Length: 174
Image (cartoon, rainbow, N blue to C red; front, side, top):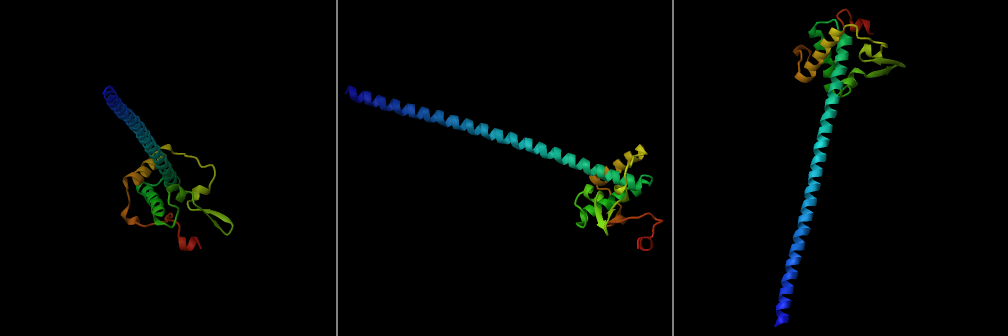
């Protein structure tokens, strides 16, 4: 009889220890999984922040390229002329016929019969200096309005080229 009670108590104690050990093991694994999920979430958030920062850097670079194009192509023009230069640049970006970025469009060069030709003449010139900082600031404001606010001139929808009014393309460029 004593043996039977001892065996019964021993079995109950063994079962309780097994359940307790399983609970501790489950708790340990649950905590490990929670730490792993927390680490993955931290990595995901860090990656999102990194991607957002990269997007901001790219956007600022694109705005700078557009502002330089506006400045060097139309610094002395009224705001409407600056918007026109920006819009032609953006129309090219969205056309599928030119590079898909503002900087790509602005700095695009073509080799024509052994001569490098720039889409925008100022790009091929050397030693360009900003001589009118207030006009450069205005060009930057216009670039931001065009890129961030979607400012457009309805009459230039789809326009991908422009020239000065004193130029006659069919006569002068043949």
